[in-house]
Length: 203
Image (tube, rainbow, N blue to C red):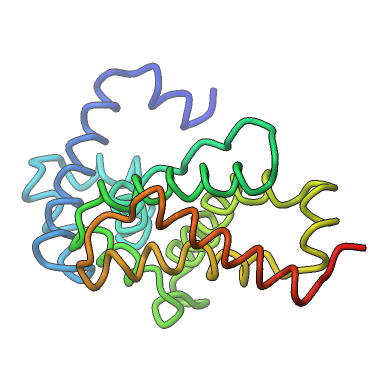
């Protein structure tokens, strides 16, 4: 039986892991990444250090798990349909997820996995950063990696497209302009499609 299976079937391990992550998350929110240490987490959670090491190899792995807890969930992929409608639906769902995530928490979590934080010396954060990018782009891949989308948009860099579509939603949140409306999401999509139509006219 794997370690993951052990955690799932043993209620004591589930409880201890939850207490450790509760403590790590609280420390991350109140004191930043450096506040999440093995000593501080075990002291706050009242879980023994030996138990902590049964769940996490080191403090970096613990920090990565706490960060992942704070981020908005991955949104569901829209049902099949016209590209414009699917993109608008996707942006509306993404806007809701960004709106519901506390600003301070989300910013802290994203900054903790930024490019200046992840390198060969921080494999846990590097792995987390890569995994988050892969997870968050999945619904966009499923909408954009279709024959219709390729015919309409031509060749494109998915990460650049994500910055064009999701970037305005994040910027709106960061500067405190309020939650994007469905009309705002539709305008982002229409502007994006119009720009692509100019650079890649459909024959």
